[in-house]
Amino acid sequence: MEHFDYSLSKKCFFAAVVCFFVLSLSYNGLCETQKTETLPELIAEVLENNPGVLGAYSQWKAAEYRIGQSQSLPDPMLQYTYYGESVETRVGPQENKYSISQKIPFPAKLGMKGVVESKKAQMAREKFEAITREIIKRVQFVYYDIYWVDKAIQLIEEEKSTLKKMESVARKKYELNTASQQDVIKAQVELSKIINKIMFFQQNRTSLNAELNSLLNRDKNKEFGSVEEFVPEEFNYKLNELHEIAKETRQELLAARLDIERAEYEKSLAQMDYIPDLTFGFEYIQVGKGQTNQPNDGQDAWMSSFSINIPIWFNRLSDQLNEKKALIDASKKNYEDIENRVYYEVEDMFFKIMTYKDVVSLYKTALLPQTDQAFEATRTAYETDTVDFLNWLDSERVLLQTRLAYYKAIVDYQKSIAYLERVVGQDL
Image: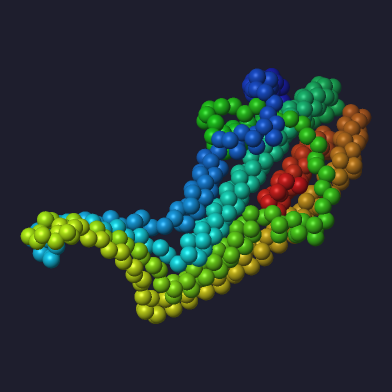
């Protein structure tokens, strides 16, 4: 048998174990000191604190305030005229003139403007709801990713214990000259790879922690706690049901529908520009003392006025009307485009969910039990010198990858449902 520096190998092994032990204590300490955070609590927090959600809410409220403004009459005009040189009249000189006027649009115009602004406010509300649903989806994605990372670290830690036992078995067989030194080295190299995986997943968790703090508008250095265990949701919706739900509740579709209505009302408003507006006025003239003995000498004068604008620039009015018609066509095409995209997204996410659902079931009922049995069978075979260490190590790798893939499939399944809820615009 070739020479093997066992003491050096042993030192390397123990150094790797110490590094892994420190990392494990750090991670376990973090999970123990932090509380378990639930998804409903995080969603409530993000709706209360996320700047994007709060900004969209303010935009919606601002749009509602514009409704009353649009239905108000224009400000009245108050005018004062001072005669630098008095205008002499029969009853005396005119010295000052005061006048006030009020423009009154055709009655239906103000009501129509209010309807247009009301549609815009409803669109702002749907935009707020859309942003809210998008932020909720992002929180769910990060939450499920953290669940996956924590599960991966847990599984790899369990695998570490298995590898230590495998290394111990290989070392004893080597001491008895029934196994090659390469078996010990392979076990130690695999343990080093495990430590590297732990470091990778912990860095990934740090990144996810920062993303969640950003969404929740938390302190940048706040540590996220542990994720509660959950069972994959039941999904029993049919495809045609989801299409119907999306038509009724998807925020972008509702906003596009409102945009068509708004454009049609604006077209009607443009047609009303052919109708004149009215302006009523009142003037009061202050008259000074005259040179007569008449009873009305120096008597002030007043008068009322009535005027209308004359919409004679038909080219401008016609272009304005054609503009509104073009905007209606654009709004209808936009609605059709969004409708097609939503239809595709519903189809796509539905079949992804069904696929992930089958994959989760396959791992749970077949692949996980089979890989467990295969690992145990290979372990027994190695201990009885029926198979070599590499086969046993390969079965360990397959077992770990299968366990990781099982929880990854669960997370992908949950994230797909979260994405579908964003697509249809409501919780399922």
